[in-house]
Length: 346
Image 1 (cartoon, rainbow, N blue to C red):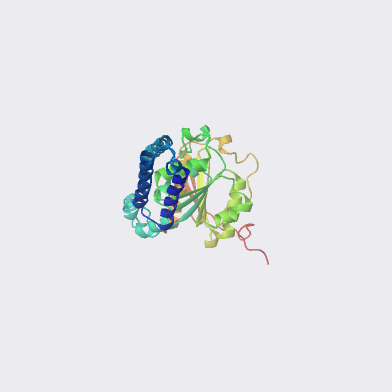
Image 2: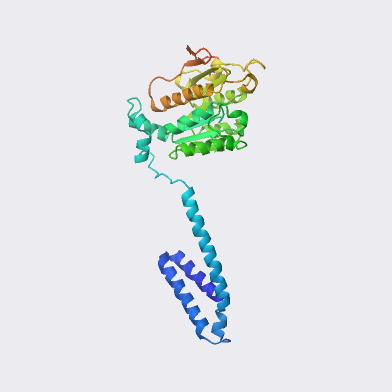
């Protein structure tokens, strides 16, 4: 029996090595086992050829096991094909499939975006810092808009207290790392974009290498240490940075880009607020819809920056007061003495 199985394996190996068609390999195996069956049925007991090719009982057991395995694989494959969504046809980086053209039709008819702007978004690579309150709407609208590659870095996990405002996550994903929860939501929303999750905390020793792979940085982090680190690395690499912040009923955002003569974050906020003056959302609270408003504004600024539509908040800061429905726009200037982007004294 072992000899027959060895011959069958040799047939399959030769077929794989020489690219022989599957039907030819199957025909060869059928012929082999037909000869074995003929030997078992016609030769007398004790014949050396019959003994070398096994027994009818052994082959019957082998055939039964093979049928069970084949049936199991067939059923499993059928179930997987039903459960798995159909993968969209990939299009070249500068081309759109029919499905993409239909998806982005409302952008393409806009004079300020059009086909060229949508292509710019498809080629864009955007990194989002944080998958929480601000990160949730930022990620959702960037993915829906067709930004081709979106990175998201966060070391936190989904908690039930997040769900009041972090709408990208669900109750079923409580305990899951936020970046993987966000990835699942975004890939379900738009299968034409690439999501890169980084389940870690942004650190000095890896930030520059990470930022170098992206065209635009959006910071939705919730602590001063990360904000200043993000600004420092963005300035160092000449990357534009859209930064947003929220607390209670108020939010703010701006586009910082010293490489285009705009201020950096440290020009406007040279020092972190003293302890207790800028409490976190968990300490001060935040109305649930506010991150959606400010995060959507951040995503809109990103779309404008990528496509060249309109005027972005470069050199300006937008402050939104949700409690009284007031919006203020203030000018911010680059500080020549800024410790991060200022010119060193001679």
